[in-house]
Amino acid sequence: MLIVDIVGWFGSILVVAAYALNIYGKLSSASTPYYVLNIAGSTALIINTLYHHAIPSMVVNVVWIGIALVALFKRAKKEIAN
Image (cartoon, rainbow, N blue to C red; front, side, top):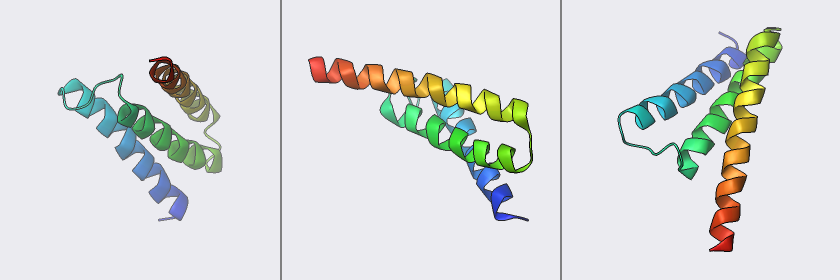
């Protein structure tokens, strides 16, 4: 197994963990850890998909990171304002 495949599996685990923790009420979808898990997981998946030339999957993960970053910045801006 290539290191890039290990990175991909790690990213998959992070994204699925964020989703599962949210669904089972252990992690709010509005929490910083939720955003960080999604950003880290998607970043790892992008590395894997780029290596394997899986462009559609890479694009999904780029969008996923964009959504998480926007939410994270909005949260930070709101906390600074308070």
